[in-house]
Amino acid sequence: MSMTPERIEEIEFWYRVAEKGQLIKYVHDLLAALEESQQQINEWQGEAKQWRDEFVSKNDELGEAQQTIARKQLHIEKLELRRESAQKAADGISKEKGLELFEARQTIARQREALENSKGSFETLALLTNTRDIKIVSHNAIVCLDKTLEEGEAQL
Image 1 (cartoon, rainbow, N blue to C red):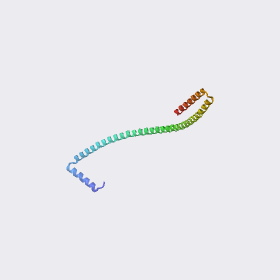
Image 2 (cartoon, rainbow, N blue to C red):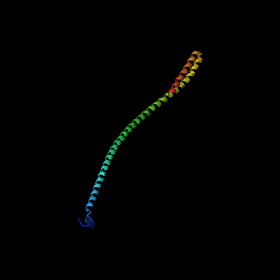
Image 3 (cartoon, helix red, strand yellow):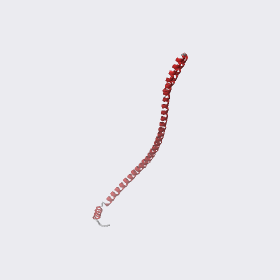
Image 4 (cartoon, one colour):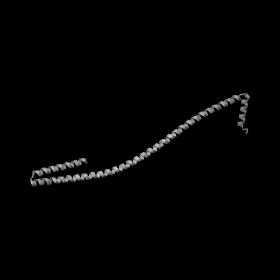
């Protein structure tokens, strides 16, 4: 150990302390400070352990939450695929039903036109034969067909 100015100053300090008889008191003060420091270290270690335990607990909770989120996202993706599949099926059904509806309306329109044309034929037949029965039958048939067409339209 070299004799630096700092080291010389420290030796002089201890010499003055020893000269005054305060060395034992100073050692007791140092021991008390050391004991207090050790107690504070123990408290800090206890707090650090508590923080570590809390951190581990929160980290475990975070892991569980991340797993739950991943499961929920997977479930959502499956639901989205099902929804898309159902939408495609519904679109297909909608197109088929739309085509069926269009065709049914065309059929009713053709039948209504045929009915209108047949009214004239029934009236002509009734006039030519001058039979009251034909007039009644033809009128009833026209009314019945007309009613049937209206019911068909209402169902569409």
